[in-house]
Length: 580
Ligand code: ATP
Ligand code: MG
Image (cartoon, rainbow, N blue to C red; front, side):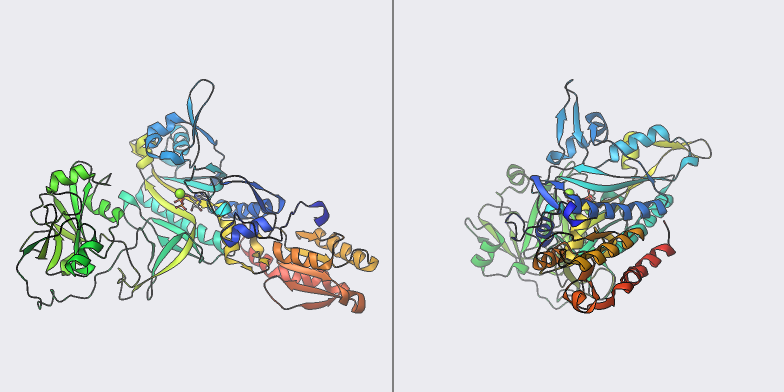
């Protein structure tokens, strides 16, 4: 490709609309342009990177035995009504009507469409397992689209869906996808970590998010400082802390007292007013469960994790109770609820079990209780891990402590179980001719987000440093002055030669000042630069330089081809070992 024929509108200024580095650099390198909030045009350079990521995904999915399909973007409402998500999905689902006033949506994901397809086409156990994938555009009307391709409204995704005859098969399919994702992200040149994520009612360790480690990541990665445990913040479990005073039997229980706390409601207000520390206070939160309200207890300085609570409580739905309900069940307005005398199912975080002589609401307006104690004053059905993990908490698997880091979720693998096959009656006939539900898994990768994450990890103050696997071109040839006849001729020869060898090469044949060419080269981040500059004019040598290194190799005009091929070859050979 000739630079002069390309559309690479690079920008010198940092665009004001961009916050994170990948967004800034994608704009500055002329890869993308915004059309509307979260909706982007992909320019030639950007599209080449997207296609590279897609190709890696495609090769690895095919290698894993998955079959590529292409499902429509426009999806009929009936399918979403069948799964119940027409109601549940909320505003991220963009809905519209056709001329016959039939409702449709733009697919934010394709479980409905794929399950509908498979229930119609697959009848027998002989056709299973099956893994179907597509690389396609999704639309999610995100509340805050931002960071360029990282969180768009329209974005490219690879989504795959596996169908198995039983749980064991589904778990094997899950493992195959897990391994495939590791290969994909390695080939994209990413430093990543697979972390445990919430599985909902399925349980077990069958949901992992693939996180690219980056300071600017929106997600918190919780990991152990001494073992392999890693999870996202929602899922992160907390191990048992060292035995407290109470467990050691050293604590003296003081007599229960009621104190007047007029208008004092929040933890902060109560702590100041009663001169106690938040860790000596118990918060009582009332939730509306599926049928009845429940109460959850956490220490004053801890934060409830509603996903954990929902799982332990075994509820499909769980919401903070409205004020009227709180008054009705506790007899006091919001801010004065406590566990003593409360006739509700009480769920307590494990840290409560170690507390003595603590403060709670009194279930009476403008009053709190002092020196509340478990067993003596109220009973708890069971203690469980109900709070949001914090740095320094004990690891749930071993002796270590939890540490926090940041990451970008680029992929997600998830065992779905029979959620959709049940809703859509996606069944097969087993060997005995008995009808059974298929067991499903789903697996997503954000294509644009992966490209953006790679830039987040690979850049410097001058611009992008593309990993070879996803670079738009492998080689950039930079003749500093195309009016110099010899220099131009040799540059052309190298260009032709490399192209004949199948190398993706861009020749900067623009009649521009060297400074401009070097700046653009660094900005667009092509891995290998072949420079024909003053040293060529004076000494006949060509300069070879990797974008990520300061080292320059000087080679004679005749050796350039061989040297370039040798530099690119280790990567080629590696690929040839494992052909798709
Ligand atoms: P997030 O929590 O970041 O919104 P998600 O849990 O909604 O992600 P999934 O439904 O699992 O994401 O989608 C699969 C993959 O699609 C994600 O891992 C991510 O890489 C990508 N993705 C999701 N939402 C977006 C978006 N708005 N823009 C770009 N990529 C996205
Ligand atoms: Mg999302």
